Amino acid sequence: MSARDLMRSSDSSQSQQEATRFKIFDNSEIPICIRNSSGVFVYSNHNFSNVIKGCEYDSAYWFEKLPLELKCALLEKEVDALANPDMAIIKSFVIEDYFYWCVLFQVVCINSESYILWHFIKDVVFSQANSRYLNHVMNDVCEIKNPALVLEPGVYQSFCLFFSGFTHEFISRLLSVTSGASKKRISKAYSIMEIDNKDDMILYLKTHSFLPSVHRYAFELINSKCNLLRKAKL
Image (cartoon, rainbow, N blue to C red):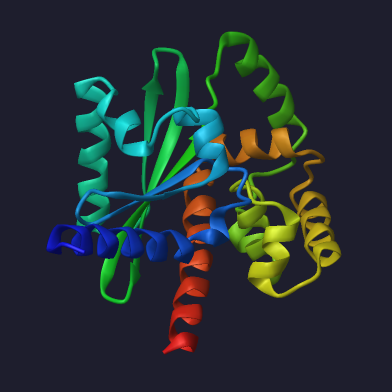
């Protein structure tokens, strides 16, 4: 085997190891792709392939085919995230002229290596009709309630993960609770927040600017879990 072949084998092995680290995101309802600090795509989940880039080519090719202005905007926010690793950076984008997404950029450090997670969260576009509907929803809520203040810590953890797109099965594994317990926590959150369905809750969180902090805390929980798993292997 030549030196070039050995290098290719090493690179392939490293990519496989990097991808394995992020298997926790395989079942996420949110499209996710991950890049390392060198700008190499090292992971993407099934929903990223199905919803964002398509299944016929890889993430690097998808990114190269994006309009230059969009690529620069995405990279700018990635750089912002790397410069502020303790923050989650969120930016709205239009992809392919008609798909509106909020992309959340989150930095995760593993073995002194920084990885940037791109989470594609469906944006809410408020038309005049939607605004009327939103006013109707808001009139049903007696007062503005910040979920971080009114929910118990365990309930708020499940709440943030659930309203960041994760399933009860994922939440139960992450928080070491049963799937039934996770569902009960969400039911309790609906009762306390006086909102009875997921769509209205998302509209409420977005309208009062609670949604970014909900997403941010969800990925802080995931980051903390990843760090614990990493330390356990050392």
